[in-house]
Amino acid sequence: MEFQNTLEFAQRQDELDPLRSYRERFYLPAADGQTSAYFCGNSLGLQPRSVRDAIDLELSEWASRGVDGHFEASNPWVSYHEILTPPMARLVGAKDSEVVCMNSLTTNLHLLFVSFYRPTPAKFKIISEGKMFPSDRYLLETQVRFHGFEPDDAILEIHPREGESIIREEDILGAIDTHADELALVFLGGVNYFTGQLFDMARISAATHAVGAIAGFDLAHAAGNVPLKLHEWGVDFAAWCTYKYLNASPGNVAAIFVHERHGKNFELPRFGGWWGHDKDRRFLMESGFSPMAGAEGWQLSNVPIIAMSVLMAAIDIFDEVGMDALRRKSKSLTAYLEFVIDALAAEFPDEGIRVITPRDPDKRGCQISLLIEGRERDVFERLTAAGIVSDFREPCMIRVAPVPLYNSFEDVYLFGEALKHILANSEGM
Ligand SMILES: *Cc1c(COP(=O)(O)O)cnc(C)c1O
Image (cartoon, rainbow, N blue to C red; front, side, top):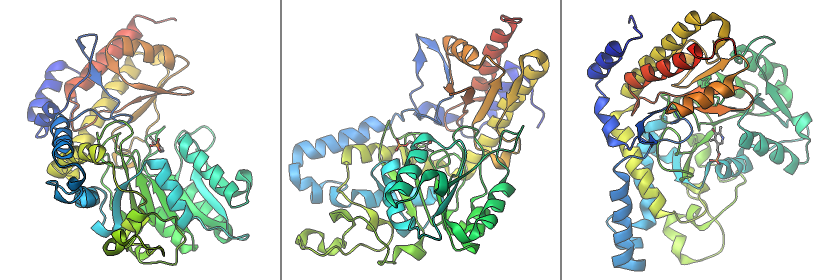
């Protein structure tokens, strides 16, 4: 499609957008009473309007039923997480038995590493991407130390080549081959939080399995952003949070995926809790941990119902729209943002405006990471003052995420206008 950097064009696209009504199902934050454009759904998704009723329902159940709500609430609390499994499994391309919502993201990854990072003196290395999200890096460092290894020996970070800013997948595949004999695990962000690069998880999983290692992914920036087929791709395990693209409220319950080929392997070491214990015997209060089959066997605790009710309201929206429709809009909205930025880069050639995110729409989600040489922080702060909510990641990245559920083409146009105004009024700074 021919894009145009005009308000008329953007508004026309919004009229033609089959998903445009979803914007009204969210609260859009207004900065100082001004209408702002919100581009931080990659960090914290917006609040669905349906959330309040979902919480109210469970508050009423608790108020009126007390402990009996566990079995008698309209959605009995004892099995509440089971209602969330099918829509969550559809979202990530998994079987119901492969997914469960529980805990938080980093906690879940540690629990999964108990089962899936089982290094031996010969085979103990982990391949990960350079510039990992810090929590994942700390996860790796502390896990390898826990097993008696040193991070410098055990963690192989793959970086972009000199002078490049995204990782070449062939370099990951090359490292897997080079370290075949010593490799225990490949662990990557499915979509990198910093650059927005989307990895080919099927290809990387296959190459990992070919050398007898395990493939795990952090999908914090992938779930609800890009279509996933975790089962078909043969991914061994994955985990993701629900407060970014999934809009389930700050810090809410996360989710895990365990491929079905591991779900019935009761020999795998794991940390147990009563919610992962054989469901039919859970209330017999006996000793002798006997995990449930599937992802549910990794659960520890009974679930936070109020938080889960928010997640349910949020995930219902994804189930209704479907990832295919979302991805279609996402590709075109993100391409429009790229077009607007490129137009500004051409108009202000001395500003060093650079899109870091892959140009290939199949190699990214909806985030565009942007450099504006040497003055990212200044520009970011001025964007914020103009009511454009983006974010800044040290040392120098502006991240802008037009989210297809609630962002519009007009939002993207407004971003371009704000950036243009900043550049036009600061030349020579
Ligand atoms: C957001 C994010 C996290 C956050 O971890 P929590 O345990 O939810 O605090 C971890 N890893 C990645 C890649 C993220 O993007």
